[in-house]
Amino acid sequence: MTSWDIKPQGVQGQLRLTGERAGDLEMALRTLMTHMSEAAYAAGTAVPGSAAALPTPTMQGPVPTGQVPLSQRGSTGPVGAALSQYLEKPQTDLKAMGERIQAALLGAAKATNEYVEGDLTAAKHAQDAAKNMRLDQLRDAAGGDK
Image (cartoon, rainbow, N blue to C red):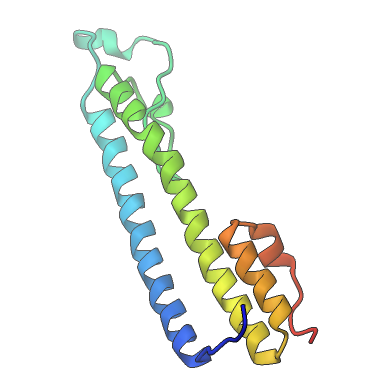
């Protein structure tokens, strides 16, 4: 890297916009999890009548953060199990996506701060940490050492 030409105010504006969009995404995902959980519970069981109230093996459907697990709300059946399995793969992808967004935001902010302080080596380290999703380095690193 031979030279940098960063406009800190522009970076700040983009970081704010990206943070807002990330918040919108988080809200949409929470809503999805809530609706999937409610759908799993509302689908009922494959057991006729009052037999559904009898103790059954606990099935865990999708549960949004802060909600009561389905197994504690009543019986769920094959639809609840299917919804749970349906969300298993995307859940890990969504977690990775959140970590990638966090690393990009932290890395851009830290690299820009180092640039403003005149420490281009530290700015490069912050960029590399963001590319490699090293959240621990981004959170703990001190800045502006020149």
